Length: 99
Image (cartoon, rainbow, N blue to C red; front, side, top):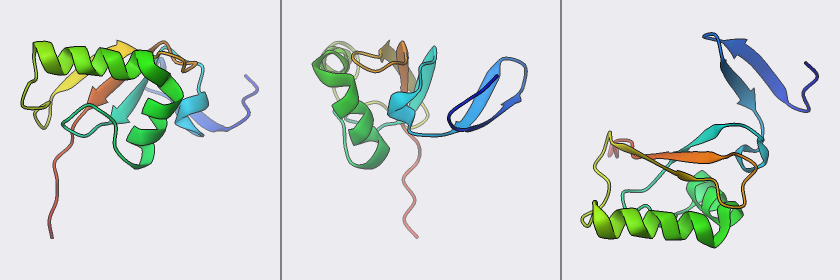
């Protein structure tokens, strides 16, 4: 397989790649989201910008229907990829470290 980025196969069908996550044509990408699910800085913001209004609207619906106070740390939700080449985005919130 010829890839335009650095990648290696591991764990069977999981592909680990070092590339621009917003350009990967894959089943799903994982977003290090903020608890608001509404986009933030860094990779989260880039994914929301590239995904466009459909991604943001899907996150807004999740907030309104299930996560009014925000997505709790350790939880994950899935949305469509919107305008991203990836078909889905898995949004997950990691712990905030203050040290």
